[in-house]
Length: 387
Ligand code: NAD
Ligand code: MG
Image (tube, rainbow, N blue to C red; front, side, top):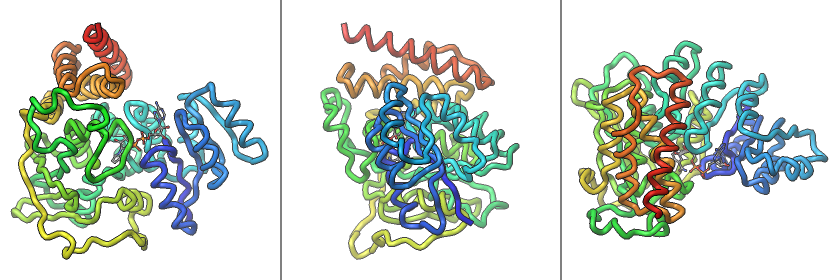
């Protein structure tokens, strides 16, 4: 049976690669819905090529442009953030791929789960903010959360056939990003352009900065805790610059399973969309002859403070990871606008975590409020620095 897919964030790095995968498998996949925040030109181009039933443009000022461009087609055009809450529930949607960036993924994901839609989850921020709410809701609805993030896809694959075997540890690999080996004094002056140059992956701007600061690995630690029901103490991070071993699981007998492959997001995207089947693909194959050595080293938590802050937020629980995430979204945005320096991003996070109002067991509304108030606090801090 053909799976009809709604892609939230189809114009981004994950979204466009997902469309490449879908194009390769016309017998298996169809596009039901495409959404984008502001890249109306690309959204229109994708809609003409993949003819979804609906498209959503987040930026309402671009509605008329999209509407006119698709006027000769049967495609329905919607606009605004609330439209995302609607399209994920349609009967003609079989799977929702959350390829949008940041906190904006939370509410549409909650809606989709409540409507019983399986989630192919790229948007890790959703689990960072509200994993305590998402995972029980998905269990209650009998909805699978299929990880797209390469590390989590690797762990998910290692766990297949192991459902009755407890996990001793999960080991997340990290490339180390463009600043691996650098010390704090080196990072004080690094520029936006240097931080945007990732050695192994081409990704959206936010996750690329997160990778340079190791925040991405911190967010992934929290994501892994929720996806695989493990404690902070059961999660290790190891730096592996070649990005071939995508992550590992250690079981109670000491045995470790790993998943390997060339770094290409199309592989975990296709795995999540095709699950439970592995589908034929012509991606280039990994060849040991091309890699004389695969290396592993410890992350430098003194230089890359964000990773430690993420572990702290996970251990604290409640709305602390939500505070961390909101502060980080403001920090990355400010860094990308050259308003704050690279190291100041960590100061901002630590500041918000120390000053935010802590809630032990937040409701969905509490998460929404925490996100809002943390952003205001973080923005004030940025404004003070700019003066
Ligand atoms: P991107 O910036 O390239 O694309 C983001 C997409 O989301 C775009 O289509 C954009 O229009 C849309 N969008 C942006 N803001 C929005 C908003 N407020 N409301 C609705 N839509 C919005 O990002 P990306 O690199 O594709 O990453 C997407 C998600 O996948 C992130 O959560 C990221 O952490 C995760 N992820 C990405 C990669 C990767 O290789 N790019 C790998 C693992 C996980
Ligand atoms: Mg990842």
